Length: 568
Picture 1 (cartoon, rainbow, N blue to C red):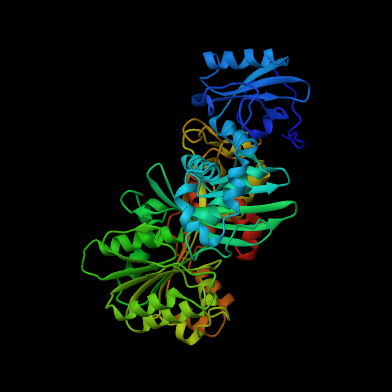
Picture 2: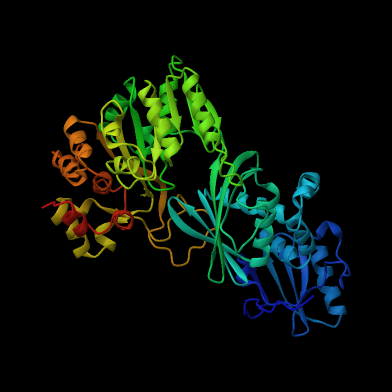
């Protein structure tokens, strides 16, 4: 076995607990494992402990917690001493760390074999490799991230090591490190073997290429779908997995719009729009802003009376809502001419529905299908990638989607425009008064521009508390990490004739000024007429729900906002 040349430079200690691979002392060989081990270890203990030889003619023992001090543990130390090696200490570690060490240095042949599978061999060998070490590592790692309530899993591979981070409560948090080879093998097995047929952008895993796929997993009885996307970086690559918890809406506890964070004023306008017999409810936001959750919550409300035929077309279905007929469609990336969405949308028009949900309008085909559905009298709920509620119209009439302004800018086509963002919520148990931790000048800006009372503001604590933090996350260098959950901050614009006239004439700036001019309430009041999403966030800040730090990360400094919106 060749020495681990790039191992972290860490001095051996007599004892200690290792929770991150980067803490592992340097070693050149595993004495207790492999085809010809130097030290005998009972097979039942192979995943519980190991003896590691160092370049200094010494050895140390690595064991999971609870095994140190056992008979097998003492026997391992005695055998190492009989080899003439100096005993350099004993360390405990997480099961994951020991598993990673063994995978990298003992089971690597299995990983290479799995990575080199040919396409025609995959189906035959799928069952045989289901329990292989790389796939087991991937499942274990995903399970760990799910336990930490991750919405996205990030593998950031740089040279010899890969950092694992997750997005939790809207914030990126560090989990641990792995050897790059372990991550490569695990992702290769997941991409090449487990990914759904037709979803892979390429046949086999390639760290040097931009790749995407849908990877289904079942973890502790929970079915999840991982939306995989990777891209090369300088010195490595990034692989991101969006976690889609696929399942029944009751089991996944689909929240109400009020539970998501919409105010009573916004709820009333949305309910009025969805109650109308025609037109589209368009929800915009960046990736990961909860648009699909909002639409699924609306569908759940519409389906309660059982008097409507409701069909959803999604890629993939994230929530199975009772009373809704779901079409789960997969785009076949290897065949760009094939578009199963077009067939599903054409079928939708012929199936006598009352209400439809299109997961996203993203191209000319889906745009024209949405237009056809609304024009033929169907109620439609859908999402659009845009940076504001009025920006939805610009997006729909852009060259990429290609709808005509005269067709879009009518109350018959548009029922309501919604834009939403997700902001981390302060933990109610450990948040602190902003006056204690923030610069007085920074707080004064909110009072000057928005007439808010800074004495009511609260900030998330840096390290959180037992109520909002979980073990398994790095707590070093945390800033405002004491948050618990996220909430929607939204802009909800009912359609008016005057607004449509301006948008039809491409007077988008004047249309926004008209909308903002309708504001009659203060920013610390819940009436959201004439307020953008940041106005909703200001209201939540005035109640101590949101931290000014997270507000500015989402919307920018208050002075710039006030100037750009001509607020005095």
